[in-house]
Image 1 (cartoon, rainbow, N blue to C red):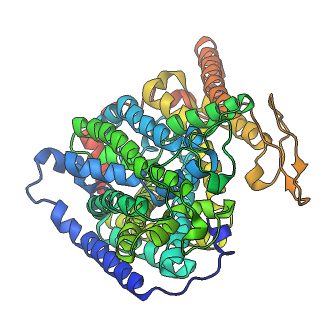
Image 2 (cartoon, rainbow, N blue to C red):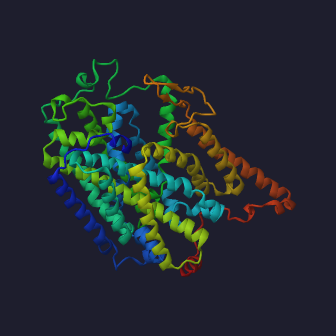
Image 3 (cartoon, helix red, strand yellow):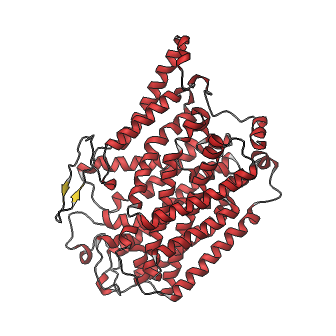
Length: 563
């Protein structure tokens, strides 16, 4: 993370590594620039042409012409980011396999997304995941959901850029700030030129680099003299005498079961409402492609975690004082396990191939996230709320400007904010608590929700989450759920903030559902039984469409496009 990276000494510049990195970035940059011509086929089927009637939508959704091959690669690469690779290894070392929930959680999330949302969303030819929310709740209220979506996507980009900065610092001796700026600038530039065409095409190259780079490096790591082979589940040299349980598998205490369940369910269902996912679903050539790429990406996401888990086990079985690192790993080093094993356990050429894998993972997620959040702001905020008569040309240039601004925001957060990953986790649970319930309702049960239910459910859920405390933001809970751990001080006299052990995130999310449903039912019954009360319908809820999941009429689409 960026906060710890600032405390590390700056390694000596590795010229050969820097040259290799420059070559890799040039390849990705060239591929991104040329991809628009490769993927945008003049012979595209008439069905695809009819579904994309503006250059802005074409840039956002690659002409809705993403096929099985490209779709599976780009969906998988989007989820397998630098934070996913480095974070999986760090979690294995720090807490054990039982607490490494992301690989399983995100894989199930992609699978469920294919079952629950892919067909309905693709059939309706939406452009973003916020479209059905704005159709159901109205454009201004629906735009409120952009806030948690924007926060999650931007902080996701910032966290993986910060992870890349520390990785390049370790292996190449490059300053964190320089590596973050260069990596983000390259991803931004080809995204500006080709939109989703460029992002999808470069994802193919990047995913191949991820799998080949990490898998290729593992045999070299296990062949190092300081690594114990066969790999053991616990390692005396690193952790001291063997414990009653394996450090590799980890331990789930009875008191922490609620925490484990809370995070597991949040990962599974909170991993669905992300524009980076829906952008690929909505760009698929057909419903069949949209569902298939979700299922295949779920399998690919799980497989991509295996090399990271193995690297974590190798790290635990390495006698680090007998390597060129010449010291034991401490807690702050765990996040650097992947670059450290590449640098000190493999030959230089292999290390740079592995570095290419880490860099590819970062850019494959950064470009997707930046494009997704920019697409939502352009369509759902700028066009739908503030400038509904924007021409297609204006929309395209505003999208490009938004990509530029959002990239700069992500870079600045990665460089200056010291709790990027922690903030990202907070935004992830806000997406789960605030956005997921309403996306489910408007897609599957639109007649059970209205504006009054949405406002009350959203507001109370947000209030409960704020009052439940957050150690990352350094404030204690006002609402103390069952099993709450009171604040204290550590051995150095530093404050340790209180934490919840009860699965409160899932409870608040469920309350959002319940409050929305019950409030909707009450208001619907009041307006139905007492029509004279309609004059007090200040949110104009009764005039809104019952369901946003109805086919868009061609004449309406044509009118929107021409405007």
